[in-house]
Structure formats: C-alpha cells, structure tokens
Image (tube, one colour):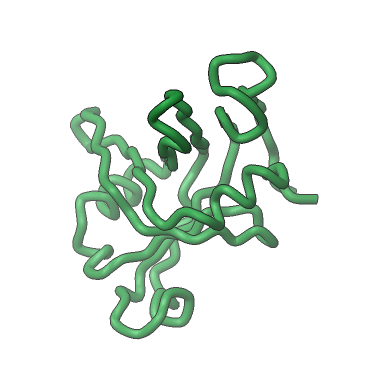
Length: 141
C-alpha cells in the first residue's frame, strides 16, 4: 500500500517543480527549487540534478539528512484555490546512479526523500476546510 493517497499521487505526478529545505552546518535553513519525480512503488520522492554533488543542498544533507519538501500551486486565482503537499522526512543519499535514474547529463549523486510526515491541502476539497486538509505521520517498512 502506498503512503500517498490516490489524489496525492495524482497531484505529484502532474507536477515537476518543488522546493526542498535543508539545514546548514551553522543551523541556518536553506531552501531551493528542485525538479523531482515520484517513485510510487518505493513511496519516495526522487531528486537529482546537474552538479548536485557540488551543491549546498548535498553538503547540508551529508551532515543532516532531515529534509522538508513542498509542491504547491493555485488551482484557481478566482476563487483563490491553493493546493499542495508537504513531505517531512529523511534523505536517503545515493552517490551513484543518477544518470540511470534521471537520464544522461545528470550528476551521479541523487537522493530519495523518505516520508515520515505527509501534509496535504486542497487535493481532496477546499484547503480552507477540515475535509480539505490532511496531516499524518507515516512509516516505511
């Protein structure tokens, strides 16, 4: 069984850009836009990049694997209809295989966001109602 609901899976598959937050060695937060893909079978978000292994993101994650990842947008501006998903968890760092996962030209380094908490809004109803919001802790087996 997937950690993501059917609506969350559908939403994540329809998006390409998210934002990931890490913590630097000095304790300061760092947020960066990243491309991603959902691995529904593994119930993870896969993130790679050009030059990832030389980035601040990668250095931060090597020291502290805690990560938050957000994908959000507006389904409509009138009426105001925000929707999105936040995933808090840990990063499973991979030093090899990025080109095989993402394609030629990508850095060999990549990582998977392993969810521990999933928060979504506006995917199952209005983000401004209790029915339209979901927050749950999850575990992977």
